[in-house]
Image (cartoon, rainbow, N blue to C red; front, side, top):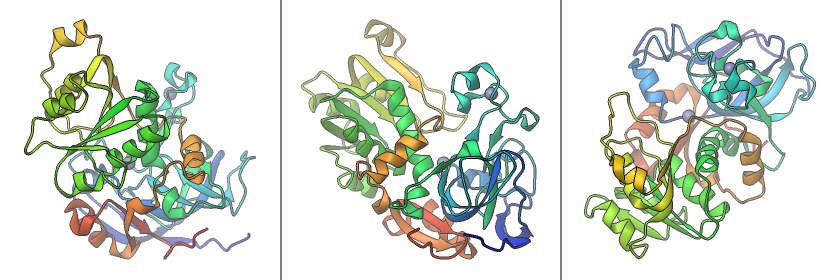
Amino acid sequence: MSEMIPKKMRALVLPAPGKHEIQEVPVPQPEAGEVLCKVRGVAICGSDPEILRGGLAGRWPPAYPFIPGHEWSGQVVALGSGVVDLKAGDAVAGQAHKGCGHCRNCLAGRYTICEHYGRPESGQRHYGFITQGAYAQYIAISVKSVNLMPKTMTFREGALVDTAGVVLHGLELCGVTPGGTVAVIGPGPIGLITMRLARALGAARIIAVGRGARLQASQMAGADVQVNFENSDPVKAVREATEGLGVDEAIECSGAAGTFRQAVEMVRKGGRVSLVGVPTDQVIEPLPFKYIVHNEIAIFGARANPNVSRKVISLIAAGQLPVADLVTHTFPLEQFSTALDVFVNRRDGVIKVVVEPNGTSPSQ
Ligand SMILES: [Zn+2]
Ligand SMILES: [Zn+2]
């Protein structure tokens, strides 16, 4: 494939905190170790609206103008120097983080908790948060932050690889008991993927905790028991569904106040809690300290998706982790404001919205 790469592209640009517009900007050049990709699909993340509102200005992003977007898929169109294992035409799925590569955590493979986070001079990148992102027709990105997709996968599925990777990392940290029971708090996109992935990893029973349309959606993700926290105490309901013992693992996917403690009190003695949903800085949780000690409750904070994208791609391609039906809406980049409104205000049964900067994506 050889395709003319234009000099200019359309991108969603934040010119200042709280503002966004579609602009014509230069197509970036891939530097050493980077590829230039034509972006086919970008999923709106739960973290995007706050970045767009400007509520995190100075941190995410550190400066303006800025192009957000980090859950994407596309095609390689040009290579920077030193790129040996990708070629033009390859379909890839992106991931947001790239570590510095040389701090203790990066050397141990834990690059989403890079000790040089936020210092680009170290080589650290966080695309769509502190590094220019994917709501654009093209993105220049490190080879470490793209993963080859097989021909059988669509770009819309590829746009969900980053999100699904966040789930897989959270589940890898706490482990999933084969034949066990998992409680999932917060049946949004992350929670629904958690239910499917926990099943794929061997859980026999899934208990979904939520409310409204999203709790209903947990049925399609295979929840065996649905607990509506609006009309029952979720801890009591989960214990009743497990002969009083509690679940093997509880996965917190909402980031909402109050749910951390619920997760702790839902698991069995020796159970494990994984915190995947991202709360705001204001959420400070009171926890039953002694209970955690005496029952050996293990708690894992999970940040993003280190070293899981390839596994996720294989699971999706093999049909073990269906994600296509979670993309309920697609929009061209020009209709970004509408796409954001549908996502933020949960219109029309929305689960995931994929924005397509280069028009309706071919299946590949
Ligand atoms: Zn995301
Ligand atoms: Zn590092």
